[in-house]
Length: 290
Ligand code: FAD
Image (tube, protein in one colour):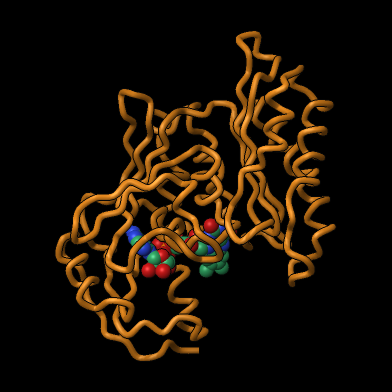
């Protein structure tokens, strides 16, 4: 399939791009890596009349740590750049982010697809969306009126829908603090596919290294957007030895607390609950083995 006809605009700077987006309104779409948008256009699921190409904008890629412990990642950074980032940038505190990249599609997709594109596309099983929700990321958008900072909890609105306005460009994602005991794991029918279910956890261990004091649990593929699971987090918050018993209880609670879609092409709600039990426990084990 070929896309419907469109007019191509190459953005030279962010201000010009946001002005153009404001002028063109709903008829325009930003294109970054094109790894999701072009497929949707080819299938005629998206028919923008104008494409505003931001891939040549300078200053929107790269990763930098902040003295307060936060990690800033530019929207045009590719998945592969994160996957191969030196440990001076993505050390033990953010290893969960680097390790999660291997789950995204195949190498050619990771070398072109961008962090900002993934977050703006807002697939509920996308690794970046799950990481943002798990780690309370802040998404920085720029529009004609200036910059706006949006917490991940308010950014995702539903299937492929976010808080971004049509004339706003996502410029950066900020992960506010290191998460040295976090892990993301998932199941997909074939390697490189979007996950059927993805699970991510961030554990807080006591100084003895063997006792869980608190934790966060996030799931993708069980709702229109990635979700935290407070009931499972409550199990971790009660505390206890970091081991199979606590992790199995947390995983079972997570499976019982969500309401996965029934019988779409990826499997039944029951099937997803079985996956949740396995994946949450596995993510906990991986998190403590870091
Ligand atoms: P584009 O395709 O260019 O744009 C996607 C959407 O985001 C468009 O609506 C566009 O207007 C908007 N957009 C892009 N950049 C911005 C910005 N800076 N500000 C505002 N809006 C913006 N992804 C996963 O997460 N996990 C997977 O397992 C996975 N598997 C894949 C398998 C295949 C075969 C393919 C083709 C893709 C897969 N992807 C997967 C998608 C991939 O990660 C894409 O890179 C990503 O979803 C979109 O990034 P992009 O830069 O290509 O965005």
